[in-house]
Length: 112
Length: 118
Image 1 (cartoon, rainbow over the protein chains, first blue to last red):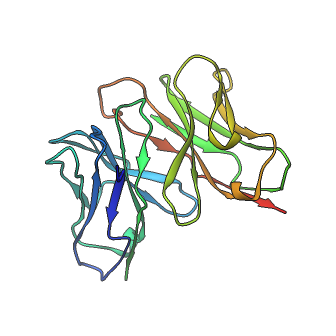
Image 2 (image 1 turned 135 degrees about the vertical axis):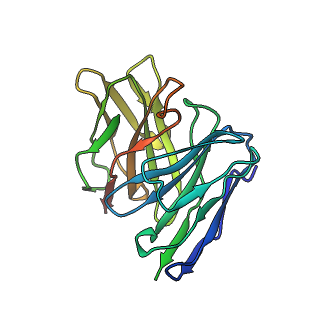
């Protein structure tokens, strides 16, 4: 099992550019989530999904879109990058509410 | 709504000393409780979790945590730390029941940086 994989590991964008952060898991987990991590703020939930075709907003969804067409993949799209979106992004998956969340290695994004 | 407060942003200790990292939570419903560890430039790894039953939970790497419902706390402890325990630790809560917009949401505290000195 590769677990949770994320690509790319690093990315630099200019303000206004768009991009997609990729996340995939091979554990057949129903739950997948995207978080951003900023110093002193812990991890904040951006969007999450409880299964293919079902997504919902977290705490900080503005400026991000998600879709879940398959169980394995949960991409995060930045529509028009802003400097405030400079952060480290983590994708996670779990088998259920009580299941352990498995985190990917993260994507470090800088928006200039 | 639920929230998590980690009472110390940084905890420095000497090697082989005991350590306690404090976590308090607020929730209108019962929750599952978790502690995660993040080593530098890595993702988060689950240390331990409390779902129900015994209030003392043992995790990996010699860590344990005690759930105290009356004080809404879930403090993490280790009797003797090693240099390799230097990392950032996150407390998190999650609602156990399905339905509504809280379904599946894991709420994290701000993190506590544990630094173990030789």
